[in-house]
Amino acid sequence: MTSTTDSQSQRLNLPAQNVRPDQSAISAAASDVFRGALRVETWWALAWEEFSRRYRRASLGIAWAVISFVIFVLAIMFFRAAVAQGGISDRASYVIFGFLFFQLLSPMVLDASTVFANAANWLKGALVPMSLFVFKSLSLNLIVFTFNAVGACLVLIVFGYRPTSQAWIFLPAFLLTLVNAGWVYFLLGPLLAKYRDVAQLLSAIMRMAIFITPILWVPQKGTLLGLVALINPLTHFIDIMRAPLIDAPFPWISWFIVGGLTIGGWIVALMTFAMTRKKIIFWVI
Image (cartoon, rainbow, N blue to C red; front, side, top):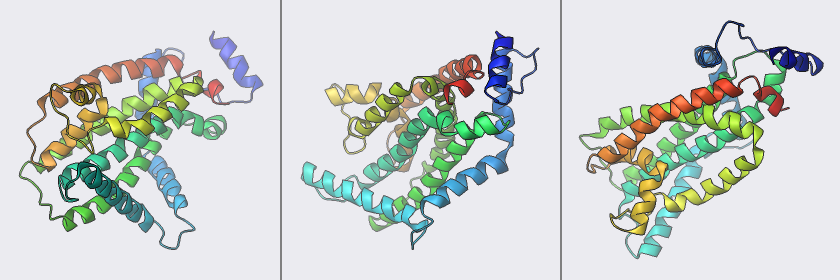
């Protein structure tokens, strides 16, 4: 099987993967992740270059990253106030933080589905760890989130928000969310590099996700929306980050679910990446 793969690589003029014959598939995949993580300067520079390119010809430059978030979050707050027949300041911090964290999670899921397909030219032309492009995409989304957070802070100040005494819990919750984003990339990236139609389906689902995620509404136990929120993974990631910032009760259930997803997700993702790593280059050409 290995000789067949090598001969295909030679015919297609593709770089062979830098994996020693005595390495198991899982250890090789773990090594790829480790080597990619160490190239901080490379993936951070690539991420910043792509972010800057989005606003290069705009007169206000990257300031639009903040302005666009402020405009959109104000729009959804007015929409919520009109639909709920309440004041625009009702549950302002709940809506703002919910939308901020949704805007972190949703792009990560979508980018995970195309992370290797988008890096096809790099993978064909340079012998680098595949995981480098995962870290590049993660850091790009982290940059965007930082600017969105600035916009969120501006709106929160206008509505008189004050940090809570348990706000520090947001930090471990945020880091745990980023850890989970990693396995989402290593699971969806290889699979959807092969099954492109599923990536389109996922894109359609994520467009609807904002309506079935507790951002504009509050889930109630014993209701249909409460059940929808419970089985929606996005709910729990948003909950562990938002709850300490709005002085809500500690979300024990969400923490347990996120903890389980962290362990199970990384096991499945690492196995998937290990089994598909040598095949990805053929799926993206």
